[in-house]
Length: 231
Image: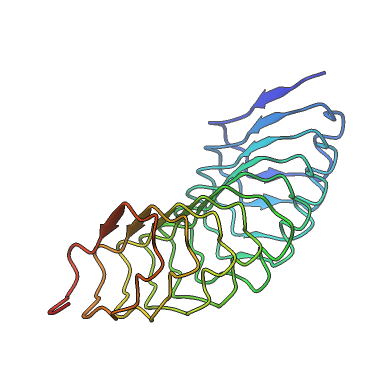
């Protein structure tokens, strides 16, 4: 009947397949601050009640569709400060109730095609402090419940016109400390509920007259420390 298991601050380097096989009622699992490099496919298969999985401060490099396949009740997944360079596109296909996804401070350089192309109800998505250079159009189209999007401290130099399509409930976007030089017309026009937009510390030289059109709910806009010469 164990519901909470805390294995944080140990020296674990590997999680073997089915190591948690008798923990069907486990709700909260902390594996943060270990030395995890490898999590075998199927390691979490028995954790059918798991809601919180904390994997921060490890050395994990890749995830695929078989790592979380049975975690259908997972609400919070934290992978802060690992060495992730790739998350395969079907990795979250069974996480329909996932609310918070933390991928901050990894080595991600792109968002895989169809990574979020499922019925997924994420409210909070943190992709900050990676090395993402480019985000394809419609990458977030299925994240209709998303409220907070953190893309700050990456290497973004361009945002496609349809990047934010589908984010109908988004309230806050953070894109400070990137390498953006230009904003396309109407790039944020889909975001009718957007309240906070931070574009500070980029390389933006000029603003298109329509780049902030339709942002009727906007309360805070930061363009501090760019290279704007005229409005």
